[in-house]
Image (cartoon, rainbow, N blue to C red; front, side, top):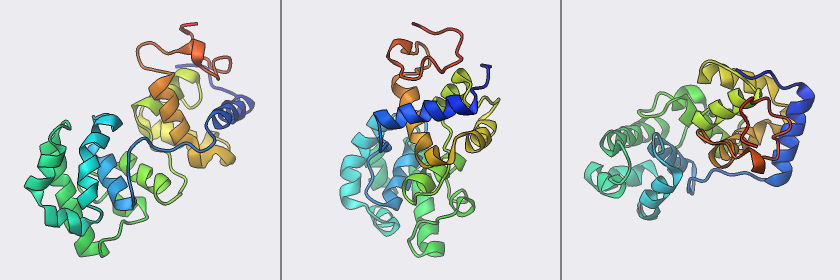
Length: 214
């Protein structure tokens, strides 16, 4: 576990990431809170690129939970069969659509407690939706954020819950809304799992990772 970054280092860390990418966004394609919820649910153990290919045509006919129910389970499977675990994901998406129509009038809940009650929706998915669709401060810790937080010394933790809690405490308020997007993109393209591209890293001098590649 890397040595903790100081408050000053964390501020500089995010200042640089913001300067490089002032308005970070998810790479998943979505049109409204419902399509975002579906896309994030489908993205578990799959790439954003793969999900976007599958949802390109799906989202031309599905924009609401009602649309999803009209499409039906077999129709959904036809659209997403290129995605891993598509059978289970399709069942969860359809079950969630039923609950959204029955209990929420077809609208997407704006609280984590309500979101995680939907089939296939865990804490990470709920946090992505709250942050990206509704502009709420939430830290959706995926494998990229977990790795970057531990490797750099930003917010080390033994599990995603610990990392989430530390990030919410340690990241300065001015960066909290966009922090998870910056960290995901940094982990995906620079601070990669096997071979981090330290030579291209704009925060390399702030990072406490011992085995830098440059």
